[in-house]
Length: 235
Ligand code: AMP
Figure 1 (cartoon, protein in one colour):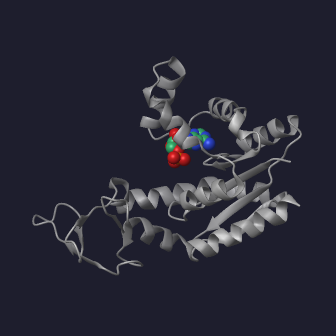
Figure 2 (cartoon, rainbow, N blue to C red):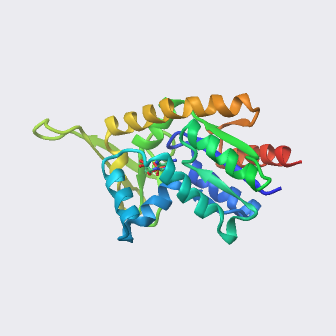
């Protein structure tokens, strides 16, 4: 049996890091539908242009198009031993399509890994994150050793306070990712996640496929828990 792992978790739960762990440990590719759609940016065919317009509006791509893109990806040679799905399925209709598609190949979803993180922690992970030019990441709330940081009020009071952070040893200024700097946008993302994923979690729970992983632990502990869950599911 191939390994079909569905990775779910709120932004900040560490999906990217753990997807890389699963990819390296089990030798299956990480398939993120968001990445697949973003990669179409350079294409000029009508389907790619339609997708770009929908993403620009911040809407979801239709199930038909999404399922087709997933099918094409799952049929590629490197996906024959299975995949890690990230950002897909997003609703019950996609989950049902995936189930039917895999069944047609004599396969099934191996495990749904739910990286569970308190939503306030998820907020702090995004809002407090500052990154260095070399990709090193710090957090003013949980990982601030070696950095200096403060909020600076906007002189006219028109904009929210700005976060200034520097590496003490080198003086390098750290920056926030643009989508982490807006508290309202972060809350909206977390809320959307909660609303859209709960029905899916219920769907997979009813099938006994969900492993809940405590994402507040260290990266290594989360990876270990993931490995335990996958190994138990594949025997
Ligand atoms: P993400 O990086 O997962 O947040 O996805 C970025 C964008 O890609 C979303 O806002 C949607 O427009 C689209 N997208 C990604 N995955 C799906 C999906 N499973 N169903 C529909 N649209 C999706």
